[in-house]
Image 1 (cartoon, rainbow, N blue to C red):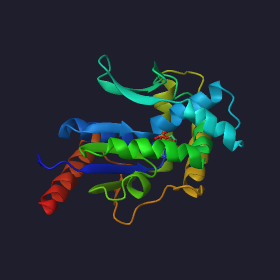
Image 2 (cartoon, rainbow, N blue to C red):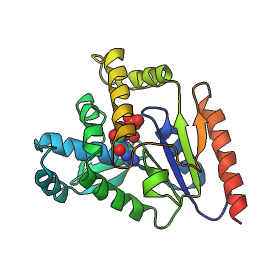
Image 3 (cartoon, rainbow, N blue to C red):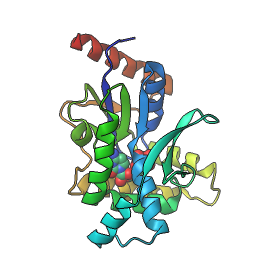
Image 4 (cartoon, helix red, strand yellow):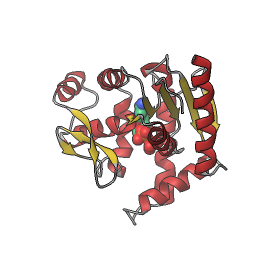
Length: 230
Ligand code: CDP
């Protein structure tokens, strides 16, 4: 494996498997993995719990000033969980209540400024894989490897449905489809760093790829990239 540490930025649509490949890649390379979406979800959870008026900039700024986000290693799951003001909120942030509001919250300039500043800091020492919507375009425009992921919309709906159904038997495929379509629309059309493929990002469509085929391909890209930097 390559020696010089790089930054790997993975962006793409909702539920196309960004976090799966990002986690596998980080484990394989001995890098840190940061799920930037978890930060927007935790902020949304705080806003919902505290009835923050999203249209009131002063209320939004006050709320942000009361938020402290950290990632802590969970020895049971062997992954890092997001903590909101020292509370582990990993099991709440995937809830449909949060999913329904998160894109609206993530479109607010003050929210993005807050989250992006922390994300940039996390990448200072490189050796990081971060996934999200604006990682290769706004957070790490100089990332050595940028991947833009996509998958067939129906494949994405079914993947997310199965994931959510495991903990919530009341969820319907229609609800999941509606949420993914809505988030993709808001995320790609918002004013503040909308989701789009960076010019230098490689495209990964994993609709009909197995996880191991996907990992093999991406590891090849990492090796090629690292070799070209030597
Ligand atoms: O559901 P999925 O895992 O695909 O989404 P996520 O990565 O958890 O992100 C949830 C939401 O956070 C997205 O729909 C975006 O609105 C927002 N987000 C963002 O604006 N920028 C990022 N870098 C990451 C997420």
